[in-house]
Amino acid sequence: MTQPESPDRPSQPPDPHELSERHHVSAFRRVPRTGVIYVMGEAARLGYSYKPDPGEDDWCNLGQGMPETGPLPGSPARVEQVSISMGDQEYAPVAGLWELREAIADLYNQAYRRGMKTQYSAENVCVSGGGRTALTRAAASLGQINLGHFLPDYTAYEELLDVFRLFSPIPILLEGERQYDFSVRDLRREILGRGLGAILMSNPCNPTGKHVRGEELAAWVRLARELDCTLLFDEFYSHYVYSEGGGSAPMESAARFVEDVEQDPVVIFDGLTKNWRYPGWRVTWTVGPREVIDAVSSAGSFLDGGGSKPMQRAAIPLLSLEVAERETAAIQKAFSKKRKLMLEGLRKIGVSVDVPPEGTFYVWGSVANLPAGLDDGMSFFRAALAEKVITVPGQFFDVNPGKRRAGRPSRFARHVRFSFGPAEEQCARALRRLEALVARST
Image (tube, rainbow, N blue to C red; front, top):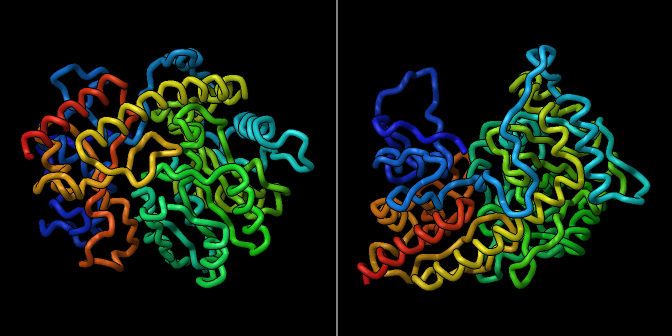
């Protein structure tokens, strides 16, 4: 998670899609803040500062986009020290250390591709210094196509889809009344009707927690192959998946359903950030056909130059299937419990949930039925800040590249994203404060 701004720095105006009128250096455009950066800046202005182990009277950060990073029952021992050799003081290759690329390919083959005719190799992997970096490299490599993206989805997609002008971003609306379902038939209609060359999506989805998995995911991959529409899968939450009853489920990836790793138009993004709970390491990767990997590696040579060599070296032992499965089991046990806590606590105070999260560590809830003054996302966010609780207003997830819908009300103005990434006691403390807030407003 990006560190919050200092409290004495000017904050962005209440509407996150409006630009400040203060003087600026004319050579530079004003760059909007993503949702989490905006809310953290507003919290910092009111006194919030990051503490690794917040106490009873400290802030509760239900806005955070990272999981708790300490030990969990049953998880592998956490890495607390990294040794750096003299050779690793140098730049890493732009595409990443070969040994790490091999380890990532081996993990995907062992976890998802046993017995299949084609296997991933190191040449099918590109390592980068963070999830946004991986996505930016891919965006910079796209041609003159129509690129579909879903609403709602990850806030950082907004600027990403606007900065690179070769492709045209095309929004695809998802409906809460349908529990954000999007069938293969819907997918075919959008690809053919809008002439989509690619689709970008988080799976599981940030913020709704909707998860395309199993036979449904297999059908998506088959359709992409049939229609030659590239699926860009942001799988950073793919180990945070839950069964119907909220229990554990196998970690899932579109890699399981790829027939030919060189021919199928499927590109996957993941990293240590969420699924291994090492966000500060900034070690992420792209998996796909070699021609895609060559393209995103070339883009990395002028965009960012490559990630940290010492951290990539330290990541290699974490990429064994045993470590990944143990960490996933620990994550699912701990986060399933927090998921239940968050769902029950929010429903108790009157927040309605279109669909319980099937993945991620977020609950996407509507505050429309709360008392006046709390019944829209931005007002709820402001009121919760006064209780030292941070949330993210839903309008940030109404991805709007180029502000082409500027001036129109957001479809998600009455929604809020609540994170259960923090430790359980912090989640419980936040829910108690929100319950008291609603009770005083009734």
